[in-house]
Amino acid sequence: MDLRQKYQAAYDELESTVRKRAEKRRYPAMGYTSNLDLLCDFKTERLNELLEEHTPKARLDQMKAAEIIRTMQDLLETMVYYCSNGIGGEVDVENVELIKETFDFSYGMGGTAVQAALALNSVGCPSVVHLTDDSKEVCDILNTPQVYTVSQDGRLVHTDEIRQTNEQEPHFIIQFKKGDKICLGAQEMVIPCSNRLIITKITVNEFVPFSKPYFRWIEQNASLVSSNVLSSFNALLNPELLKERLNFTKEHVAAYRVGNPEGIVFFEDAHFHSIDVKKLCLETIGASVDILSMNEEELNHTLNHMYQEGVDVEDIISCVEGAKSIRRMFGVRKGVVIHTKDYSMYVGEPLKADIERGLIYGNLLATAKANNGWYGTKEQVKEVLEFGFGDRGMKNYQTVRESKYAEETVLVPSKYMDKPKFTIGLGDSFVGGVQMCF
Image 1: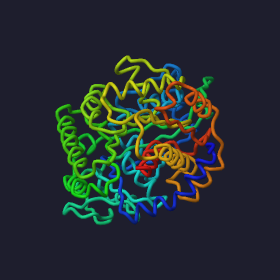
Image 2 (image 1 turned 90 degrees about the vertical axis):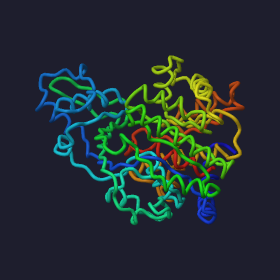
Image 3 (image 1 turned 180 degrees about the horizontal axis):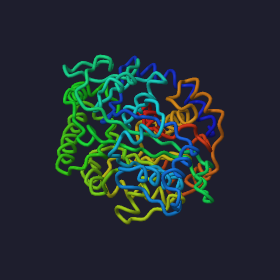
């Protein structure tokens, strides 16, 4: 089959795949953090007005991102920096009211695991989530037919049965679009790439309180847990607390494997608030996971900035070799997944699961979210089939097929969107889709 036929076949079997998973009670377990996203109604016209009002004599090309946003100038310069470079990132904010007063916003869901679960729910696939921010607003969004969590008395429940125990954590999401213009006086900058900036008020996820009933349920029902997703250690800044969480997770993974030797342990990497914390995380947990997954920016940051191993993310063979380096460096058991807006790929040992099908489902769910602004239904996923493949994804596909790494690499070009309506949670939706192959 050619690529278009493979995508069509994956969609044609989607309904039977999720039905069988629901009937057999096969759940991916999705950990570990949740938070309330405040989706800002961001327009460059509003940014330009604020720049003229608060920084009329500033130079756009000299603006830098603040380490912590405390003032209006910090906010504006940080936004200009990320927008003008077309890069995504995360910055802490001290004064939440500053942003609330500056932009209109609506509620959304934050956290890799819970966003992945909502993406699965939209196509009818069940999962179990671990909550940290368990506020009413978060639980209301998650209260859907196929998202489950574990109550304090150890029952599998929907989130309408959860009562808040932890402080709410708000994340403000600034989404910017390729081609929009930032102006200040005679100065003009064009945004080179659609992306998002996350402005975070860290509360509960600085500590990632673990729900022991959640872990106990997985260990006692391991045969029902098709994959065990680990993520969201990135805001933990206390090394001793992080070590405690990681060591607990390693013991949990070992217990899960006793109950389900075929289960996949899947670790999704993230933007970390500290290089030292990220190193500790990867070096501690890497050898316990079957698959380590990351996006293109994280691949670049890990190899070029943290370990000076060197990778050229514009060269697909360099990316394959980078994935192999990451697997070797951290002792990953099976392989590494790299996901981008143009393609996704797996590099590593053959799996019993159809990882190509998993990558296709991941691409479909991510693109459906980009196209619609929310988690794609089956009908909205079907619309994605009509999209073409991007030039970069197809070029990389052909290059890998003809390379010496063809036997150990599975690459799937994405259905391409030049100007997505939505850029937040796309990687998380991808992670959700991949779980359907395990």
